[in-house]
Image (cartoon, rainbow, N blue to C red; front, side, top):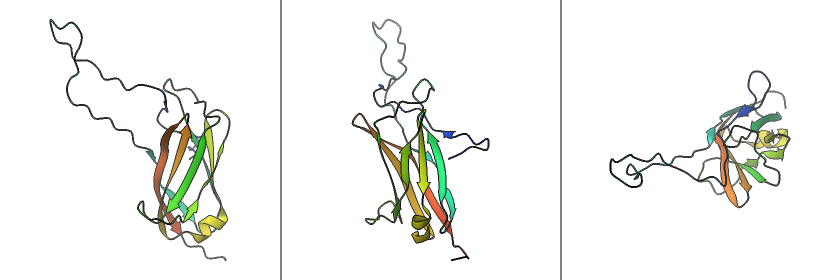
Length: 150
């Protein structure tokens, strides 16, 4: 996904080895801070909805950052991106090609052949596996506008 300035749009920091920490609750007289009760951890992929013209190539980039805001080292990661009619559909409608670029950038390419065969509406996501840690980086819908020239 490119921003208006032509630079890759950024996603939330990626931290496969980081620990989730909660702010402690200060209790006067307690030796150590105690948890403030039930916590909710929410980590959802970035929502990226695509609107494509049937039969056209579509390319976009996703930049991945570490917890400090620096480009993440994703060399050696395995990527996969699938398209289905619904999240629950057993059949894959197509795949989006992925390639790891420089500086934590993932280059995405929906080929003309795949976009030509897509239904009018579908869903997609992109997963990354790095150091045995699976993270869905982005997910969304795909709206396909039928082409005129065939």
